[in-house]
Length: 247
Image 1 (cartoon, rainbow, N blue to C red):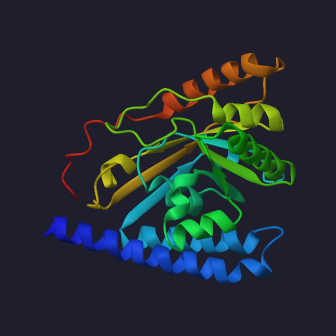
Image 2 (cartoon, one colour):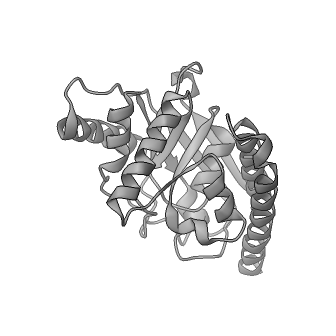
């Protein structure tokens, strides 16, 4: 029965996500410049999906943020629930950097494409560079970005090696990086599963890390090492959680 309920919650969340994508597309003409309405709708979507799936989110470290400035948030990636958890709980105007393949999803992907997020084409360097410049432009306009340093969701619940892209953007934009650790989401919905297990997600915001004084790849490497260490320090290995019984 719990499995059937979990699958039903997944499909209800999908239908609601498609509807919200359609609504955001309709409202884009009146929200082209700042994207605040887009973000408000995204937060409403996130909180509703979490409620439908009975996922509770806790957050610590909010006091580490300066609400008057923008950041690059760099997070681990364990589940599809990472995004709604972060959008719902982090008190910032966050713009997500996502992979371009998601744009083929009707309404939801179209909302990403035409909205205020940034799609990265990982297979074409010229288009990827254009996307990076767009991301940097958003930061310089006072918006914050969310990037997943691992590049994709973990398959086993363990923290994966980081890729350089997120740190290239941060160094070039010149803004501090906030290491963001997500714990508990892997158990709720691992990659390649459509069964939702209600539970708790805990977000931990570490203190912002300033951009190193060095430049280029050396600065990116230093920053990546510092951020990885900060996330690893707060990370709870989730590899044994997939089979944990539902509460």
